[in-house]
Image (cartoon, rainbow, N blue to C red; front, side):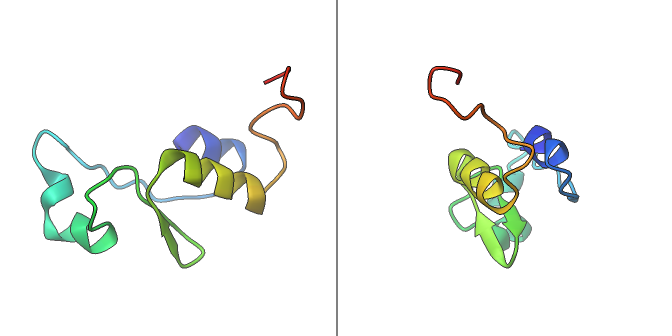
Length: 75
């Protein structure tokens, strides 16, 4: 997600989540994402938790620069 956010020029605050230490089960993370998934992205009043959904959303709200080439063969 960091690469896509940086490429599109969208500023963000990184919040590390140590899965080995169980940070994804702690109240602070559960308040953002009760499913315990990573990476959650809070943007535009939404919380997106699936990587592909996050990439699709970023592409929709900020189409340029594109994350993927336009043509399916080029992708």
